[in-house]
Image 1 (cartoon, rainbow, N blue to C red):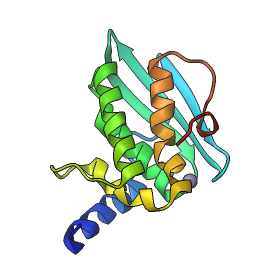
Image 2: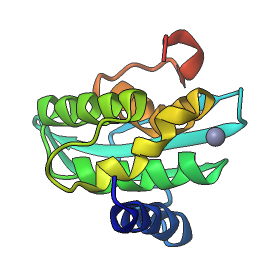
Image 3: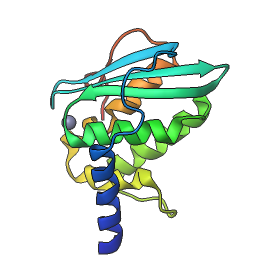
Image 4: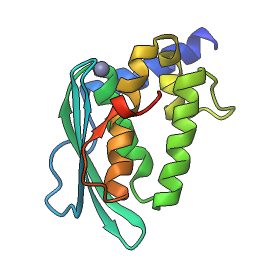
Length: 151
Ligand code: ZN
């Protein structure tokens, strides 16, 4: 990765951390899930309003490290307006990026987290919000925990 691109991607994470998008409870939410990453102390709740099969609105709330909160913020911007299936595809892409460090050919905000692959403990931080969002989409009432996943 070029130095310029590294810089760009770092800016994406810093920006989401400083000015989180879609943060706070969503009063109109009809799905809620909570995620917990005890190894780092990260918490993330995801609120979304599902209309048919489309994510009409989404927000997150939580506390924890910069990676977990920036990733949750980015996640909300990526899957808002998408269908459940589209959100799953995006998560798969994001998961591949953070576990392999391989970036997609097109510049994507998701690739801002490629550097996380070098710090395996941080992969749980980066995927926490996504796991919570997918649990909310699937109407799984049990809390999302990174501990039950091999990543
Ligand atoms: Zn963390």
